[in-house]
Image 1 (tube, rainbow, N blue to C red):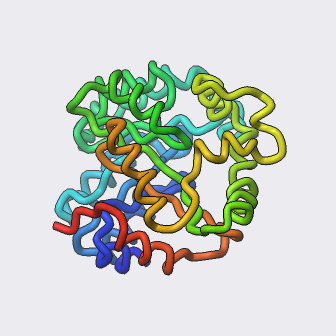
Image 2 (image 1 turned 45 degrees about the vertical axis):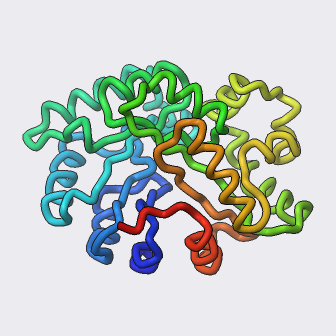
Length: 263
């Protein structure tokens, strides 16, 4: 799959699910061109010196194609370790800086939603990789990051012109995120209310967090993010059974419609 995404011209594969550098290495081995990024690696589960060592080794072996995406994850996933996440991220970045093989600022990005983490992304990383956001959030993030930092928001898409069916698919997947306060708090900052978080999300919330329709409709939504200040949009295709389905046909369709840099 990674090799095909490379051939199709996508610029980066973002690995979800708290991947290790070694998992990224498997995809680097399988591809000649595409960037492989952790999107994101949880700072609670991977020791900084080891991450730094593997980062250096992978980039040396693969022409600098590994991008280290870091995040503080969620209290529900990290458990009792989840304390003072902003401070913990700063300490983790310091550990990467002081490792025997340091990770350069230009080769790491942070999962950032709120202003403080976005500022940290600007000051101590190459930029930010926000998840579950809108073009409005992207515009605000660009203002905080400034013009030079990388801004790579994620966008969920359902490639289906049947709006009712597409919303059912979207609602079934979004529901798992509505139990995580980091996301619901950010939704509130964007103007949503508790009533939007019931039963997998309101239609209003789904329309904000997803792109629905054919390839042209998806392209139009991607363009909204680019116009708002994104440098790169990470597309996550959601299907009726996202834990089993491999959306290869959808990736192929979107590759023809999206503004991919195939150089």
